[in-house]
Amino acid sequence: MEQLLKIDLSDIANNKLIYGQDEIINETSGLDGSYFEKEIFTYEWNRCAKNLFKISDGFYDNVECNKQSIYVNENVKAFHFLGFFFWGNNMEHIIVEFDNGDTEVLKVMFGDWTCVINDNNNLIDKIPFYGSKTLFAITTRGDIHIAYFHHSRCELKHKGKVKRLILPENMFMHIFAITAEN
Image 1: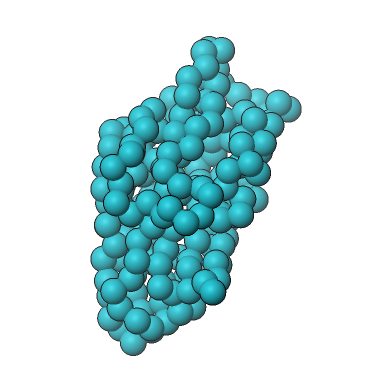
Image 2 (image 1 turned 180 degrees about the horizontal axis):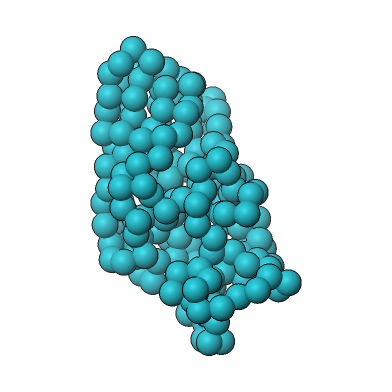
């Protein structure tokens, strides 16, 4: 039986996209003024993703990738990533560093937050949350548009204890959650 370790990203989260009704919101909030309304986001998160993923509980709620290191110190056979690209469908490389000094490069593909992606071969199909899930983004102008979160599962080829993950340097890649499977 596999075990899931929901990795806490609070220490490296550096971007805020979820806002409550009591928070001040303006054109610089979120991504170009677009943000997730906390009440709607929480409802959808609890319905779709909380069994597989943990969201940061700090002020910032996601990681805008900038070569951050995430220390894992666990035996892992696969990683699950949840997020999106702010600009276009893309693939990035995440470096896995093992305790023995070996490294492995994971190819993580996310779609643009405005697009559904159905051809990602890394998507897990045995856990209820897979593929693209929908949440609503509400802009400061009052416009509502649909935003999609993308889930990518990357299986490791190497065996051993994972020391850390090193995220790419790409400000357009937003990661909301990472879960290790062992």
